[in-house]
Image 1 (tube, chains in turn green, cyan):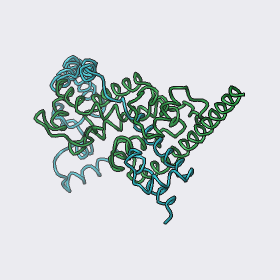
Image 2 (tube, helix red, strand yellow):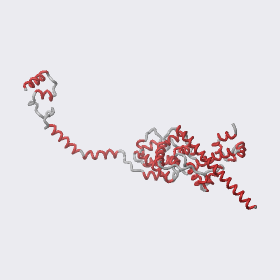
Image 3 (spheres, rainbow over the protein chains, first blue to last red):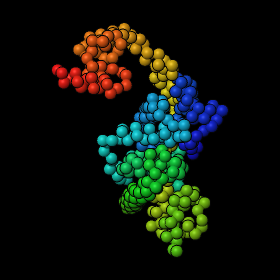
Image 4 (cartoon, each protein chain N blue to C red):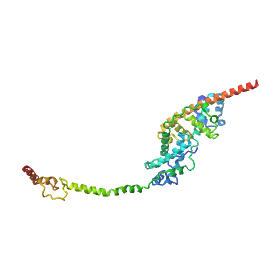
Length: 219
Length: 151
């Protein structure tokens, strides 16, 4: 997966700090360059927390507007990427506060298309076969994890950020990210093992039913 | 190390490998070990779910334009200073009136200061001693003490 940059990006359009200074003088075009440079990063961060795409877009827009308002506090030696990622992270925490974490999902709770997606994964398939069902399955299965643990899991294991980079984005240390990651991986494995158990017992039952039907038919 | 523990240790790496490309010993072992089958299936499921969860998080076309249109208008750096001074010029007459009033009250008070606007000839030696700006001399101090005794 093409990963967005977290750090400074020095291109012909100017460094982050140059663009920040232009934006402070009222140059919205300069700020637009910053938005284009870091929009994918912000979407990845917000997408790690939130399920609804519209909500992710709202948070991303709000994060950039808040950054614009607070631009005078941005330091010349800082990196814009981690800063905007932290703003987005805080906005996501605000949205998730008060929402109840969902219960761990069981195999029987999954829809037929989600079960098909899970069977595809366990057989070594990829998410592209039915992207919507795969995403829904992933959302339901990982919803039981604490948001920060899930965020660490997605940033590190899915998007390939280092613990230090993920820490900059989440506003915590690399060590804290590693601890969250360890906990999240263990929890995700436990969820997956339960789903695999459910899938196997469902398969066995279906096979038994088929055998029973074949026997009845032959009699 | 047993094959089960080797698969347990490397399950995340093995989960990334397509089944036909797994090492021969792993494929052979998986056909006879339900526990490792389950282990690897769960690892593949986790890997697939995380990838699916992270996917579809790209911004829509024109998101940056949408943000820049929503930006509040930022005043130019000179403008705030100009705006700041406008009310200050409006307060100038009031400030002048206040200074004149204070000056008049001060000059007509019972204990005037040594401003030079009033004659000091009528002052007593003690008052001269207190209000006068010249350096103190022994005669002046003595005159003030004697004058006080006379009263």
